Length: 504
Image (cartoon, rainbow, N blue to C red; front, side, top):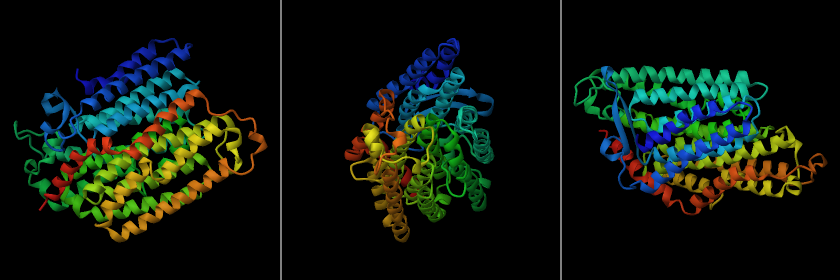
């Protein structure tokens, strides 16, 4: 078993260990789950050290690293085919990192503890599998594996409206999955394996336009398939107007699940566009790029304005995610070096920042048992350490220089300005709006006169700091010196950009 399989399936096999522990021994279940989630992080970190930054591509097996390939269902040419490049590895590593921290953040779960952590580990395997799959059938299996545990994690351990939020999440995502399934089958029956001559689910063969049948080369067919695939990924991002499931899911989900939802799951939509839509349908991607840029600007402004109107702190953070994912869409619509790298950098940056924000919300909710922004005030007096952590997270979301958010947004604007000058100027207004609701929130929650009701509120504890400090360090570290992350992704993103631009 290779390193990718070890990282991907250790959480799955770890479920057996969790299930063998008596349900009364909750501490042992939580400890075992944390250890199981920590092992993939260690292995993934070792793989980062072994990663060859200059050896990464998009559509050639030789340019992927840690490749594992074997026949799975030979009758239909389905393979267990996995590998990593500069596009997938940042998200692969981030998944192991945030999953471990989210399990530690789940320490206060006391309802059906064994079931919660077993489902969480299954969810981690599904997420990791999406980022390593190079066979479309395998990709789809892992994509669907995520759906079931997330449904139950929201529906059982969520808030008062958890059933509604879980069903809404399930139905939206299932719609996207059905559209993706149709496209996957259309590609399978119209792409030829150059070696065997049969049908194939191999995504690298699908990226080679010479393997496409005459039917698949028709302009209208390609446009329809691209739009269906795009909707499937747009729901996950989520892109306006497919975003309405997100605030409900976030508000009702437990803190750790909100962290996973915003930190990792949203990025799978844009990752799918990068990995599948762009290289398989590069001609359609170019023709629809301006529309994607417009959708990105809409996400930025709409999400920011709606966030400003929120009274619930968690819902504010949820809508801020809609806004910040708009920068990813804007950058990836440019097909420029800075824009594409900025989009991927924003995916990683937002994953860390939004994880911090939801953890921050969880800390105060555990103490005050509500999230109403106006119900707080002056928390700096009673919770100075917590205020410092929250300020770091909020200013990182604002895009303060010296933090990853600034680097990501700057790269996106650099890449976008030469292509969509007017849209860039309009999108820049989103930064002002973001600054407005961030500063207003900080002022109402942490500054001013202390609410006597919270005068004796305990400050953040060691376990909570353990989940926040590593994220804060990376946000600042990659904000000051982003090159380790940029070097990791740059070759693959450059290869993808060149591949798209080669379209006549």
